[in-house]
Length: 239
Image (cartoon, rainbow, N blue to C red; front, side, top):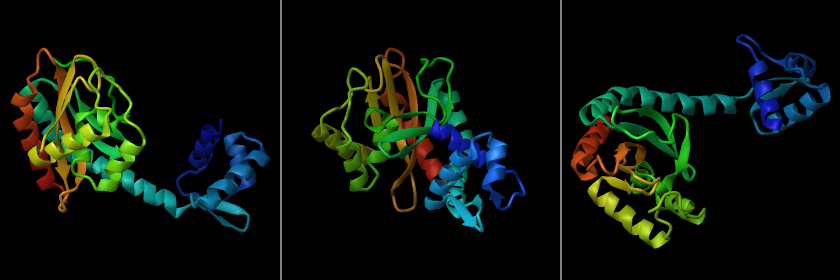
């Protein structure tokens, strides 16, 4: 599998390594030298590796990607005490998510004792249009971001997923005005959520925080102010 081989090549580099030859990387990964040579050439062309005199080392593009990952980890670390407080106050599951492409990615999840078992997991993805966190982020994102999500299609995920572009746009406008987004069985049967965006200094969403629970147990309008307050507080603490 190509992805596994690419991963093997990246992880073959050890602390302190500089440039390594194809033969050494083939030996470390256990793959044929011809295969290693072909994959290394692809990675060099993509800027993920740098070549010198027939040897390669990790490229600057990997450093740039790593800095993004570190930044998101910093966001999750900063948010963790606020998520814990929100979970204790509501006894329901709290999510922190960002938007990547047309999906939300969950950076942290603090599960509540009274909450349903949800399919979300840290590092997991879910279609943005079918989640409260996704709608909270999209409502505070540039128009081209929203258009990308709509153009990709709005598949039905739960019983009440918004699949009509016009209806989604109208709801996003309301989310923008109110500062909170709702998921009423849009991501799955029996599950409701309320979310609020974490904003940067320009008013664009960096992430979103949500509370999720059973529709029979959680009145999302009642817990919405707590979610909104938590998101606003976190927004003010971030650089």
